[in-house]
Image (cartoon, rainbow, N blue to C red; front, side):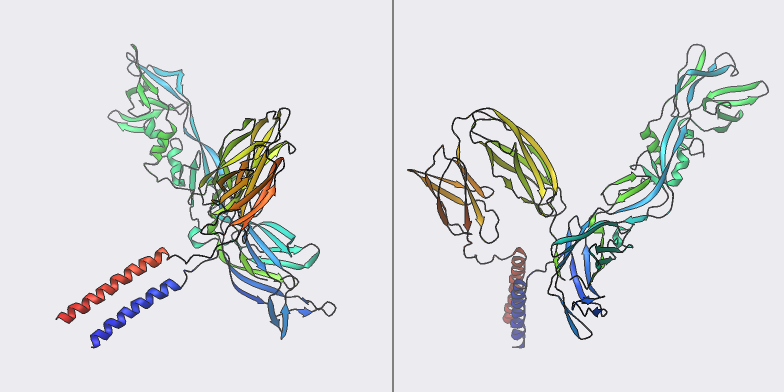
Length: 604
């Protein structure tokens, strides 16, 4: 009996876990989260105005900056108590934080480093016993000099620039661009009309522990791509050590052979010889070729000759990397460059993550969290329009280059603005994931003209939150003469609750003795009514998400616009999320195991 009770209890426990997992919602997270709001216990009441002055509302918030505009809004209903007095804010304050790309910075200097000097072809007469020799001044390789960059100090400085905007009741009262130097600078923004009204932000822009940069004592050869420990410089400098590239490429400067001490550098100019030179009582004798990659035999009938070869940049780099490992200066893949004599290594926006403190003077007010994503739409491709007799469709392809899923707008503008033409739809507002591309089609309509008219269609991509233009392009068009002004009907389907355009809605129009059905695309369906100017009846069919809607209108020449505001149908029962399905499967398996154990034990 005890065993049966245990088995039944186990089965019930599993069922309870399943139900709880399904009913408890998965946690959601905010990018800026406010953890604490309080008013400082200080200040005084202004006897004339009844306002509380000399104190601060203090907000403690956790930031995790991306390339978005983060905002903390302080509502006008925040309450606090000081000395037993209840304080209530009466103005709404919004603080927007616009992070710019952070970077580490260190000053650098550069110098030209000679790898080897101008080197000539050398010759030794075959009958001169080594004493008759020289160099051909007209056959040579030029000196090899590389630009090398070096750090001028041993520590990096973090730069975390922001633009801070402060709004009072939706009116901008001040803004400031500041580099918080890794969170060490305090941001103060005052209302120019009242210096008592201010916002103070501390600890903004601190760099997370995972984004510290410790690279020290490096050199860069020609570009930031080729970074090595600074000791590698000795390999580049001409004959600085026995391991210098010059001694590898053109042979050692000195050696000892069976004939005694020998050298491989001209005493008068210091460049490589290509033959081993010996100082004897009879003078300088050249005897024996220097075997090295930078020489090739170039003999003629009378002379032994050593002709120098130029070393490529890649050959020098390969030699350096035989001794030193190349360093990756672009540690986080966000880019690195030299600006004004300083090396910048850029960080991802998410590197700035810290606990910040926002102090709002008691003459200002308190708190929700708002982080609208910032879209960055770029035009990838588009088709031409050209001559337009009736209408021409054209395509625009865009790519989302923001780091977060966000919504932008693609607007179409016609110039000149009084041209007898129209574009349907006038704009679309796609929501795209990072790197996602999407293609949209527009109809350019000739509304009627008795002469040729040329102009441009401007494609403008904007960011919805700030209205910033992220890209634009222009397409030329020519309207051809058309005897009768066109009659166009545009039917928009809009969600009555959200105001968003709804696509895929079947819309039927009836006029005269005719009817036609189209599905809305980007929230609009368009008909060319072929000059018809009577009454038209318009209706949308009921769908799983929306109720049907209908209306009528009398058409006139030009563009006729009708909007159907759709009400949502009764919401369907929520679907079981994928994670819950996995829990159900696991629970079924667990129950089956428990039941099997029970049955086996009963048989025994």
